[in-house]
Image (cartoon, rainbow, N blue to C red; front, top):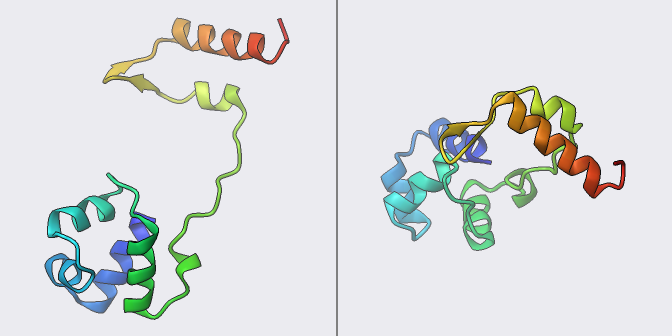
Length: 103
């Protein structure tokens, strides 16, 4: 969603400060929405869609397709800024299998 918010703003040539003012949010709050640090509330999404005269559904992300855990565990992961090791990933995998009654 943040990519869409930024793209709309940039394509219109408006600054973050100006858009934040138009949408009645602080510049800092707007920046956090645009960077994806916070998920904007529905009221913000509706105001933004009204400002740019677009369907609000364009701003709401579609649900991602679930990924197989094996694929997820092959990617680098971290928890609290510490990398999860291969051994820890295997424990996660086994734990999930036990939750699903496979062990």
